[in-house]
Length: 446
Image (tube, rainbow, N blue to C red; front, top):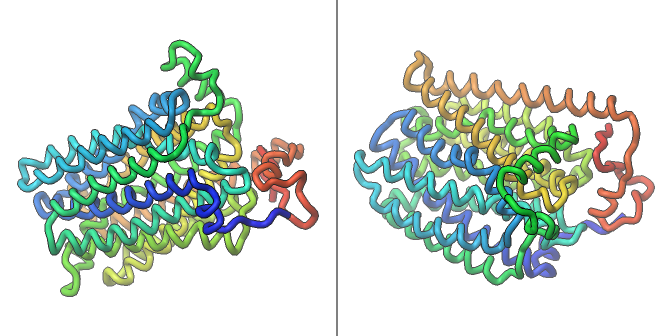
């Protein structure tokens, strides 16, 4: 069996991935630094559950409308240029948040976040689609684990520092830093070689809009396994409204004299980062990286989320609450990382941008609906935040059951064993060696 590549070896030997990773590192840090500032100021100015929900929706829902078409652009043009311009424009927009100082200025936050989200609708599918283009087959799993853990680490660091810095220096500092990190990310990405999709046929076709979108959808619907992969992250989004509760728990329920509202909120987000950082690395190290392990972990990840958020909703203080946020995000990170890796293995390069964009669109639609329901429940139902949180924590049980049923029924219906060439190719093996996992492409094994 081929030797498992380490993260240090990946960064040392793969210059293109190293530059992409550095761009992600600074950009994610700035993102979470400013996110705490946005939530903190809005809860202070409005105190409304629907106002907080509006922020989350503004950061999510535009993906649903733009995402599928953004995927066509990502598959058609130079992915490097798409990422650079997305970063530059988002950096300019970040400076607009400096003017968010009065309740009547809240519309600026919504408007700017919508514009930033539209740009992210191009950036994220491009970044996800490009990883297999700049990594060797044997590096894909490690690259995804490192990318996911970096997002998580920057969430923890950015949220913790952002919460403290916002309390000490005000929101302007957070947004200036955010703008600078976007520009630095653009610089790192600009030093990577051209990142066009490998298949030139798509760029030669005329009418690069609706017809190519339909072609991408047809590619997915013709394979039941790919349909299943498409809905893994949207299943995670069903409970995404939990984020709407964080400001309320930090300000009204778990408030402690030792922490301000923004510092407490920063602690909750930092706990998310720690859990998401540990998840992919822990599972990859101790359980392996075969598709069979990944598929099973996805189902158990949903259950970990449910149990953790049930306990979070009843936690007596913010410290214990943060612990359960960490374990819940541990499960969510495993779902996110493994589903992304399975997509990289299974989906052809010329369709990959459209697949990730469509997945993101569905994900953002569902998390937006979940957020609206939570915000509306807080403001209009005779339920406390703890009661809303408890009910929401039961929701991940649904995708867990559906995923296990899907794996069982798909395996039973397939019956046959397909070629193991995909997995062998990922690990640089001519065949699956004796004693190793046998996780062939497009077949679910137990």
